[in-house]
Length: 96
Image (cartoon, rainbow, N blue to C red; front, side, top):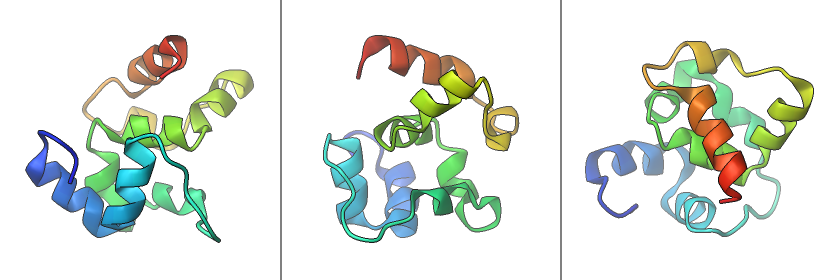
């Protein structure tokens, strides 16, 4: 479980699995045939996407670098209640 976020972490763990979540959020990398594009399925992953920590997961999967270079953002950036783009830019600038 991710420190300090018990209820949100439970939803995230249910969607990506506790080991993968811990690896990605704590600095590890995904292994095997995991397809990171699956995380953007709003119908099954909305609880995860709507969690502000989702941007950290996107950063770990190197999506933010792509979005900044391409100048294009995922649809969810305009659909969540938090500042997706701002947090993504902060993470990219911080080199986290």
